[in-house]
Image (cartoon, rainbow, N blue to C red; front, side):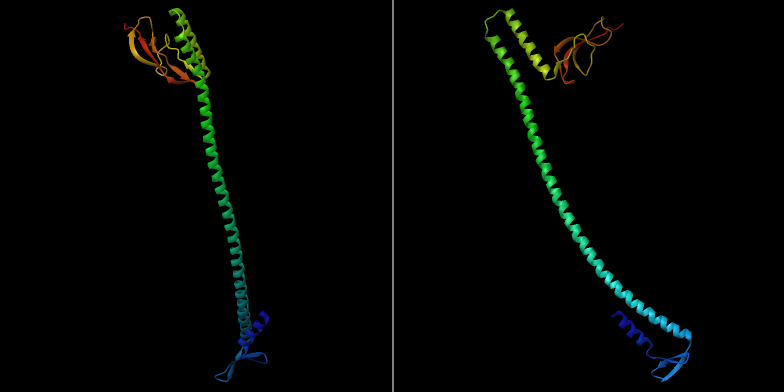
Length: 223
């Protein structure tokens, strides 16, 4: 079909051209005369015809390519939209899983904290039972004192198992990280600030000071 159009186009281009011998005469309908055209003119005529034909073919090919490109773009667009929808659904599922994980973790953490508190309370209740028995017993001062000391050791053992330890203070150099000086005095026997009296014992929990020792601190005497 393209060949027929090319031939028709070539015929229309040269329908007014007459050849006589070795010359080409361009026919002018108005003047009813012709002028001689050299061989170069013939070549130019043929070149023009070929150029127009090629342009027509290229234009049709370009139109065909445009249709194919549009179809490719539409296909890629559909694939991209499907992939975006899939990714969005995956995001929603991941978000739901994360929310469920947070709730489950919070619930498990609360359960472990509650269980730990319950175990600690049960141990302290055992000390309360000992205190009640000591108060209910009819005993002299020395026997009562011994009973209280036993309860105290039991309570300290419970705290030690949980990581709570008393801070050694009396006779130790003053350390503001562990000691809180609430009183001071001069003592010629010490070379540096030293804790000489404990008003309230301090404690650490897993190497962290949770309560400093309230103490009297002795300073070296001047001179």
